[in-house]
Structure formats: structure tokens, C-alpha cells
Length: 511
Image (cartoon, rainbow, N blue to C red; front, side, top):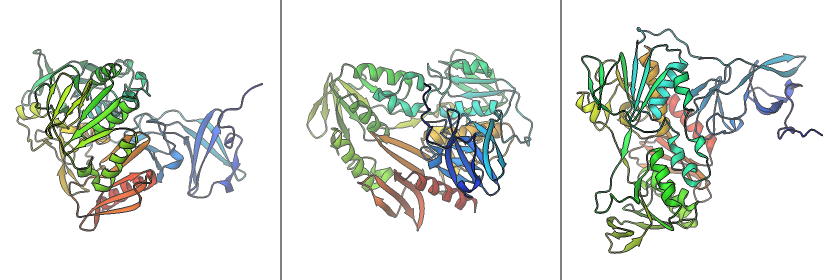
């Protein structure tokens, strides 16, 4: 006897449903064979696409329909309902789309459509480059290379990465992979074969030592020179080191790369107690991941409340309580003054014992290459709205870029994975000659045990905080306002509200 698929209770869209079952503006999930399909109606048009996001498999039916797109509720990826193309990171792969037939007041989902190479092909306004060099193998660098090929740029692409691994899903390193709940095959952004198959010359362990702006060459530490027509600097950031005695010991680690994460996992297998230094996003995600491994975790940080500077007092109190519920012990308003073997000394006079120490006290942008090349630098590489630096043809994206943000009205630099990806995509379009201003609303998410925190916008300071819902009940929207305007919105289990806040900011900036 054959078994029914898991989605057998959903309507079989190949057999059709009555048009009346899908009101204008409505959506439903059915199936075609074993595949779940999202059906969306907008006026006279009906779209059929895969029901889940290609990033982390978020349910698109719970997302937001905006014009002819659907936005994922989990991490704000966006897809074209007509073609399935992934229009915004963090999703990079398209969702499947199907043809739809309307006959005799019934809707039928028919054959899959062929994948569309790109849905946004536009004639560039300037001559396309002959060769692109990307310095950096992180979020921005990979997203740029992927977008160049998606836009059918046929010239050489050289990606120089100082890392020893191909581009990875860095958020996973402090979350599921570190916790031991995600296999390593989930971590690479693409299989190793992707780069050769797409003509991307990925060079690992390649350290760029200088840029000759006049001759349009990148100089490597080994003396090699690589010419470029367009250059993207996506050098990212590096962890801040703890300037105390003993911080250079082998059981004292920072987390940035896949190698860093593997080393922490290896040490964690033998550790009974961990001390995390820093109550930042990275520090507390590490704390949650290591608690999932049943290791005792202590957190030492100078703050009065965790993450208060970014998320405010209410969410800071909630995050502390959440971690304490899971057994984390906090030592706040304190500092580590020395590490001698397994003994950690605190400014307060106390000591802690730890088999593993993880430092998460922030990162600093890698600006040396830009500075030595004479590019404009001001707490980051200064770029215009097109992400072009002070040197024509040289762009910057990701953690190093300081750009004019139309939403806050300020020039900002942020260290968000999704922002880096979207900037890489925008830089790629502009290297091809399109004049596409980078106007995306900054966005990030943080995961603590089973609790996600979404954040859209950017608020360096605010004069009031408005809380809708109940923070302690894990059901809230928190708006950070200045002069009566929401600059940023944090939310817990209010995914659609987070998407709506992002859309409102987009429309406000568009005038």
C-alpha cells in the first residue's frame, strides 16, 4: 500500500480548486505531487510558488505580500511571485514557480516553469567591466560574486579570501552548528564545485597587502599582482582581542571563522565549564549554544543589562532572565583582568574556573587596506549611495562600509550579515554600470534558545521607547523613537509586524 505524502491534507492544486476559495489578496498552501505550493491571488492574477523560503525553510504563507513579491517572515528574504527569483538576501536561491490555468471558475496549477536566469536584466548605463576583483570571502564578497553571475556578467571574477574555508553561513557558527544541532554540510553557502562551475577564481589564504589605485592592481602578500577593472573591498571585521595577561592561551578563543568554531567545538567536548567574556549578541548566542551541549556557562560583562545599548532595558532584562532560566550565570558590571590557566580573575576581586574561555567583546573593521590605498576613511570606508569609494571603480560593502542611510538620515556602518549580503548585491549591480542606490533598511536577527529577536532599522540613540504586547511573554514589538518617529523596531514572535515595520521605513524613505 502506498503512503500518502505529509501534505496530503492540503488541497491538490493539480486537480484544481474553486476560484471562490481564493479571495483577492488571499493565499493558501496546497500541493502538487509531493511538493507544497503557495497560491497567491492579486486581482486577476494568480501566482503559484514553492511554499518555503530557500534560506532556512521559513513558511512563506506567514509572510507579507508586497506588490508582486512575497517576503519571508523569518529573516526577511524576498521572492518574485512571477519568477521565483530571490530578490533580497539572505535567500540567494530562487523558489520554484509553476504555471497557473484558470478554467471554468477553477484554479489549476500546471507545469513547473523553467528557472529564470535573472528577473531584473537592465541595460547598464556604462560600459560593463572586463574584470572584477573581490577582496573578501564573507557575506558581501560572496553575494557580489553570485549576483554578478546571476546578472550574466561573463568576465573573470577573482575572489581573494584570507580565510582557509570557502564562504560560509556565518550566523550558523554561533547558533545551531555550534550547538551541535546542525551538520557541517549546512554551513557552506555553496558546495566547493560552485566556484569552478561558475568561473569564480576563489583563492583561499590569499592576503591582499595593497592596492595600486593608479595601475588598477591588487598586490598580494606573496608579491603577486592582480589587475582589475572594478574592485570590491569586502574585508569584513576581526574580533577585538582582550588586552589582559593570559588571553593568548590555547583554550581562550574568539569566534569569527569556521576554523574558530571547529576549535571551540573541539574544546567544548572536554569542557565542564565555560566563561564567555562579553554579553554581546555573539557572546550570548555562544552561551546559548554551549548550554545546549550541557556545559556550565558563566558570562562576564561590564554592562548593567545585556544588550541594553541596542535593544533597550526591557529586552535586556528579558534576555538575561531567559538565559538564567537555562542555567547561565551572569557576572555583570565586572571585567576580566587576567587568565592564568583555568583561573579567571575579575576586577571585583572574585575568580572563576573555566576549561574554555570565549571572548565576544565586539569586532573592528579591517580598514588597513583601504587606508594604505588612500581611500577616504572615517570609522569605516566612506562610500556614496552607490557604495563607491572615493576612488572611482572601487567599491566597498559589508562591515567596513560607512554609507549614507536614508532611513536614519545619518552616515552609518553596521555589522549585520544581511546588510553585508544586500550591499554585496547592490555593489555588483553598480559595478556592472547600473546606478542603483543602496536604500535597504538595516536588518538582523538573533537567536537565543527557541526565542528569535528580529530588528529592523538603526537607532544609535532614541528619546522614547514604545512597547506593544508583553516582552516577558515573548510576544512584543518594541519601537525606538526619536522626535516621534520610529528609527528601529525590535520584535519577538511578531514576524509580520517586523516585516510591516521594514516596509513602512522603505516607503517613508521613498517619500
